[in-house]
Length: 83
Image (cartoon, rainbow, N blue to C red):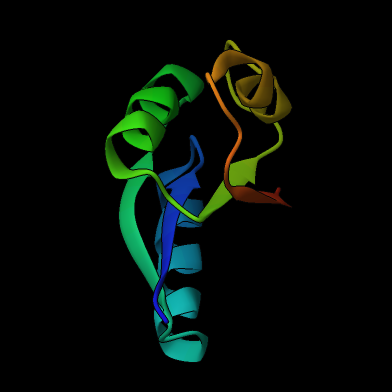
């Protein structure tokens, strides 16, 4: 079974490294898209309905965990990531 995932991180290098590691070690995880901020992530979650969100803790404007209070329904797992 494929696990649909989204990566949310404001740093491009962090998104790229995480995407590469997931592809290399977890082929069952399909990264649907990457997002640079919380508002973008909310739209991506509504559109893609992921099973898993890799969520950066600290980002400009919002802390990553604030996303959980902003989505209509948290029907996905979260892995918090940080540099």
